[in-house]
Length: 393
Image 1 (cartoon, one colour):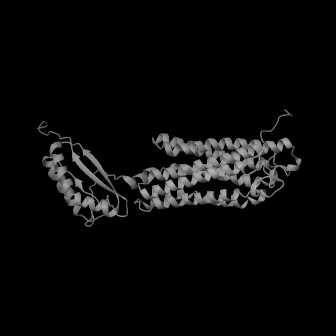
Image 2 (tube, rainbow, N blue to C red):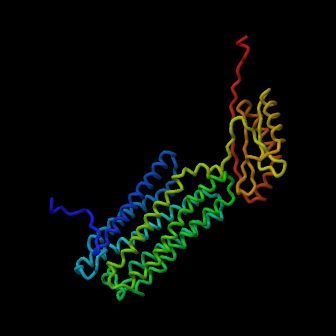
Image 3 (cartoon, one colour):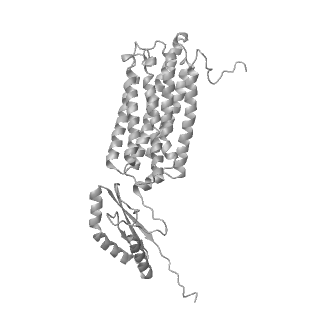
């Protein structure tokens, strides 16, 4: 028992590698919990957002491998003074850190892509989707540049062995990598505000959605700290010791990116956002109230007998009342047309629908062309069961 080796090294004045281990393992556990919760939420709510969920799962896998590799680097001397390390240990920790730095770029890129794809899926705006595509292109370009820059900044052979005299610009490649990382994060914070600009929903839901996306501001601040710490090791002759603070911030940034990419789905906001963008719900016993000016839709309603006259009089009576329309199309990019029909007389209902469609063509054209919106037609079929009271007599 006396010869048993500890799983992790002890923190001391000569070994700071334990700080890297503590940061990486703690945040990795949190990231696993968040991704597992996201996965469970997708199963529970039967969400088929494979394009959105797959990148974050891949990012978690890369993050796990990256943490293991960086721990191997700590075991071989990262966090200790380089003068006390053998040549074999210097080569070993440099190789593991080299691979870990490349995987860090991959994990961060995938988490960014997950957020971009989420915004692209939620918005019907073509201009915003083009912005998402452009942002995705910037992220891909940044990823390629960062991976190639880290991989080939130092002389051959042994590109993994970093020292100021062996590497181009004494580590200057880390500056543009960090700057473009911050810029992409800022863009990912701005895009949700553009998405929510024309969405009509309750104020508390709007705030909840924007706060969940704006949590990426944490990554912006961590990225700024990551950039500020580059000089602490890039010009150092004791790299294994001086790189510790930079590595701690880098691990915090990568794992926090994975965690924050899961935040929007964990607040169950998709239902509210989806209804605000594309759907209209008609509660039971509540009619549609259309304003006097600029009606946002029309209703085709037909039935037979007493049900027809009662439904028509109730619908017309409510349409004259002043109030906010549930299909209000102001400041939105979508026009919703709801057609309500019954299953009593399908032939007559079809003729009425065609007649009313021709009459409402002009107003529909005004709505779609004037507001530049998307025309959506929703058919609602209402079945009416008649009860014969004569049997009771």
